[in-house]
Length: 316
Image 1 (cartoon, rainbow, N blue to C red):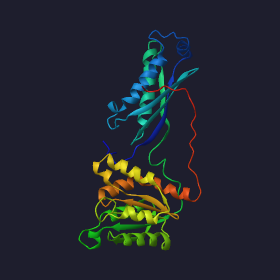
Image 2: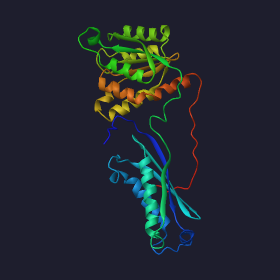
Image 3: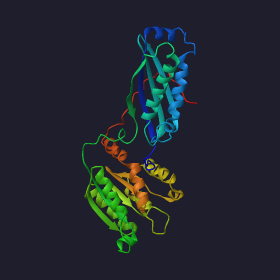
Image 4: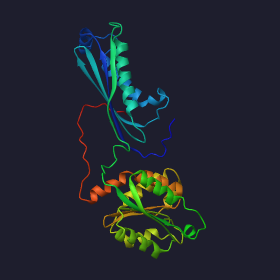
C-alpha cells in the first residue's frame, strides 16, 4: 500500500460512466416498472453508493477514503442504460476508483435484476470521464523560472558545531520546483544578521523567493518572527497557518512554531523551523501552490471553476 501520509487534503472529484446494453423490450420493462424483482434503478443507486464507500474492501491497494458525496444518474436509451457517477471527497488521494467501482456495481445490479429475461445483455464499457484535485490540478501555470535564496539561521551551524541538513533539503526541493537558488547563506541567530540578510536578498539580489530555516521557536535566541515584523510589507498568515496545521497532525510540538510568511516588495519570504523533518513537511505543504503568489503579485486573479448543477444523490 502506497504511503500517502505526506500528502495534504484537497477536494477530489471523479466522474465515471458505465453502459449496459439491453434490448428495447427490457428498457421498456424498466420504464413501465415491470421488473418482478422491483425497480432496478433505485436499487442500483443504493448499490453504487455502498460500492463507492466500500471500494477499499474490494480493491486491495485502494486507501479507505471518507467519501463526502455520491451522485448516481441513469439515462434510459433505446438499447442501453447509461450510468453516470460522481464521487467527491476531501482527502489525500483521488476518488477515481470509487467512481469506477460505483458505476460497475450499478451496472451489475441492473444486470442481475434483468438477467431472467435476457442473458445476452452486455456491460459494454466502464470508463473514467474526468477527475480533478490533488497537486497536479493546483500546480500554478508558471512559465517564468524564479530565483530563490536560502537563509540558514543557526548559532551552532554558523560556528561549525553542527552540520546543516535543513538548508540542503530546501535547496533540493526548490530546484525540483524550477526555482533557481542564487544564494545560500548561514548566519547566527542574531537579529541584526537576520534582518540585514533578508533585506540584502530582497533589495540587492532581487530574489523572487527567500526561504529561511531556524529561529522560529520560543528559545531565547529565536528572533526570526520579530525580524519579519521589521522586514515584510505585508503578512501572509494563511501560509504559516497551513504549515502549522499540517505539522500539528503529525506532532503536537508543531504548535510551538512561530514561523511567518510575508512579502517585501515582490519578494516572498517564508520561514521554516530548523528541524529537517519540519522543513520537509513545510515544503510539502507550500509547494508548488505558493508559486501562484507571483501571478497574484503581478495583478492576476484566481482561476474560477464552473460548477454545473445536476440532480444528486447524497451519502448520509
